Image (tube, rainbow, N blue to C red; front, top):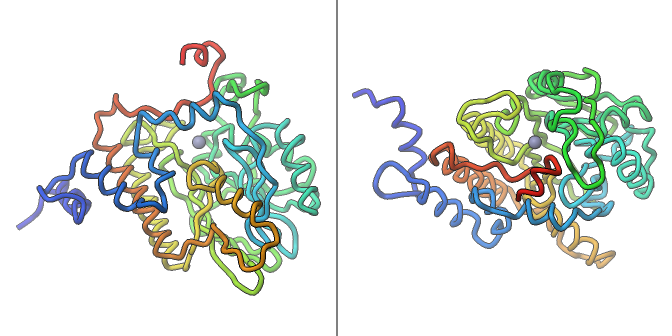
Length: 348
Ligand SMILES: [Zn+2]
């Protein structure tokens, strides 16, 4: 007997999540909550379209974080809304994301890299997770000072090329920085599965559409003392409002497929931790604080090392939230409020 094409994924999604066949929004949220447990409770806001977590943080004003070494060769710098991961290899630096604009790159990211004891001129690659201002904003400046190659997925190079100068997508209202953010000039087009070897490190880049049409995710090998780990970086977080891509955003269906694929590839690669360039999503802000508090204390456990089972559970939680979002009437899905015009900000 042939099953209806729609039933197969739904029935699969229902395993363990519900008892009556087709899962509801409530079933998926309950499953996400169960999967989160205490480990990922701070990430569950992604399951709640009414969450004010991001709006509250932006209203209070973002704080500069770090720079902080999470591992011997991987550091975070940036602010509590969005930042940059720096991988220090034996032959130069690889950055993931580029700061929120030229001013941020010049005044925060570059001084932060120096504070880590590194030379910003040694940046060889800047991989921008996606073509939204808060991720690509400082890329052109970083290229100017270092000659680094800027890499994005093809669809997000195209997305950036379509952004109108001075539009909200390029010049959002964000603190005092109202400047237009010209995207970097087209440079390295990253294909799915690309491996970039630099010195003693090799990162794997994956194209994971969903948050944006060509979101880039990565598997990043890191070291702490004589131990090695692999961090899984999901390149986009906020859920689009639509099932299918709309240009500026990706679609919920491809997002679900991409996260499931990243979950599996992360498992195969033995990834035992997650990182995100939005540090409030997966507890990065808290973990950086714990590392700073532990200081040189011998034997302190690294909060970024979760073990591969927990990495899988984190992405499974994420998937349940994506399914819940796809089941909600589209009009009810609200994007997490983004900084926008002063007028719109006044309305909140
Ligand atoms: Zn984005």
